[in-house]
Length: 130
Image (cartoon, rainbow, N blue to C red; front, side, top):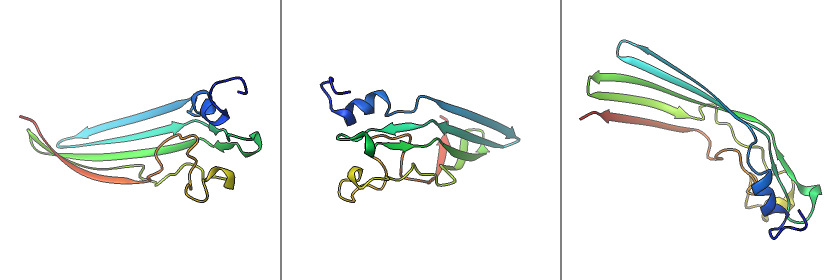
């Protein structure tokens, strides 16, 4: 990376900063007025390169994130959905080296990311078909 216009960290974001693989399993089921969806997403390994030294490169290991929804059709045109994204509250690996956390500001690597580090998200929605 030493001959590129960008430094090691920024070049790494492009070359190795995103998962090379991502697998999704999506399962839907319906019975009467109920339906459900379970989605499993496996994010592959990611590398976060330190600007100055390879000794401080971060490795984010593969993780599986699970989403779940259940829906109920109140009437034909109106559906209530309850769900959660990342129901098991999975987070990326934490920063290992103090050189990468910007004086303690970052718990999770900002130099590379597999998925959001906001954790579980619970929601409800009401859908009306006109």
